[in-house]
Amino acid sequence: MDNGQTLDELEIDLGEKLKRLRLNKNWDQKTLAARAGVSVRALRNIEAGQGSTVKTLLSVVRALGRESWLDTVAPVATVNPLTLTSRASQRVRATSPAVKINAARRLIAIAEQAGGEEQGKLRISSAQLNAARRLIATANQAGDKPVKMPTKSRKKTE
Image (cartoon, rainbow, N blue to C red; front, side, top):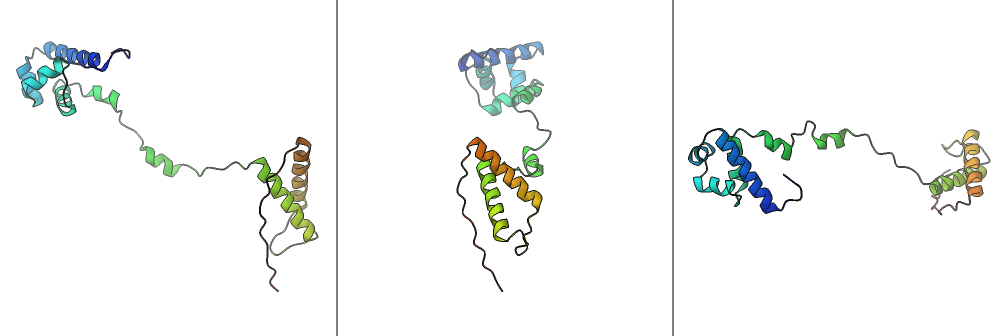
């Protein structure tokens, strides 16, 4: 079947193929219709390319022993696609450079406010501070403008 064919041409082509299969088995239309459980008139319509129900077409294809044709239309899935989504690892969201820069600036501000000491349960290492400073320096050289992010205010309980 050529992709350039119209639907009518495809229907006629399919009907001719079904007719050839029937004739290769030396069956007349009455025999195939009986084996397929369809009327002779319905079989004539299919072979003439004059339309058919899907049920009638499937019955004729099955009676001719060509169920394998259906595998090309809807192949059997070896793995349920829904299972793959539930087994897939959680997506890791990439953080934009602007968000990273703002986070680095906030980290440095918190460390400066705390005087480099422990603030509540937050402890900032010198390695983290150095990494934050490098990130900000690189961003400043590149001319990146960070997005203003809201800061959470912490209430001190004593």
